[in-house]
Each structure stands twice: as structure tokens, then as C-alpha cells.
Amino acid sequence: MVASVGFNPGHGGPGNPPWFSFELDEVDRAILHELQADARTTTAEEMGEEAGVSASTIRNRIERLEDVGVIEGYHPHIDYEAANYQLHLFIICRVSPDERAKLAEEALKIVGTVTVREMLTGPSNLHIEAIAEDSAAVDTVTGKITDLGLEIMSTEIVKEEHVQPFNHFGPAPSTDEDEA
Image (cartoon, rainbow, N blue to C red; front, side, top):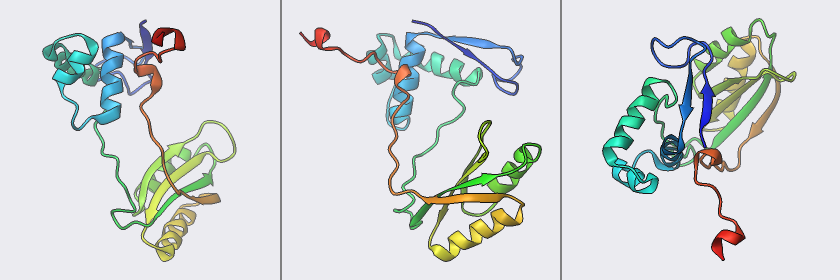
């Protein structure tokens, strides 16, 4: 199975036009699955064994996936509570679509902000993920968000986050017939 990945303007790697598309094959998908599961300790040799190709093929494929913009970086998964940020928040905001991009960039500069997502649909069109040590720090973050001109619709405290690799990059799930 080959998946076609289309890129938007600004994607597709350096020098590639906005309409550039890249075909993912099974080896590419296996690489992406393994990197999502554990980018830090998974080796090219291990990925090669899993995908049935050499480690050098894996390294070349990773470089190509980086060059075309499919792999944009490698980021640690941080346990904020262990880092003494007891409160992990999602702050759901509303802003004029004309100002959304500009205010998203400004919100990202607020100390405590981790990510900002611009939503295309729905009235709550800016979602801010933030961390705080205590309720006073939450008040500071939400105050600065309000000062930007964002309307806060709700503030949610995250209890636990569960993450898994995108399943379509991984091996096909086995069925009962496969196990028989």
C-alpha cells in the first residue's frame, strides 16, 4: 500500500513547490511508526530488521523524509508534573478569524504556553495548551491571554494524557484468522 501525502504552502521541504506530493511506501510508514513510538532509542538497525531492509536504507529514508518535510523534528514527551508544573491546561478561546494567526503567535510568547492550535471550524477557534506551577500562575497566563484580546471560552485541567503512534503508519492489525 502506498499513501500519497500532499503538502500545503510552506511545506514539502526546501525548494519544493506548494503542490509537491510525496509517496509513502511501507518502509516509510514503518519508519514513521517506529519514530513516533520511540525516536530516542530506536536504532536504524532495529527499524531495518522490522521493515526487512538494511540500516543504511533506513538512514537514507529518514534523511529523505526530513528533506521533503514529512519529518519536521524530534521532540521529547515531557511529564510536566514531574518537572514541578502541577497544572496542565487547555485554554479554549474565540477570536476573529482575521486576527487568529497573529494572536496565535502572540499567545505562544506567553510564559507557560506550550502549544497553540488554530482551529478552522467552530466558534472556539484557538486552543492554547499551557502549564503552571499553581493557581496564581494560571491566573497570570489567562490574564495575559485576555490582555491580547482573546475571549476565553473555557479552561480545562488535564488529568492524564494518553499518546500512541498514528496507527496507519504501523503494521496492519492481526485478525483472529491470522492467529489461527
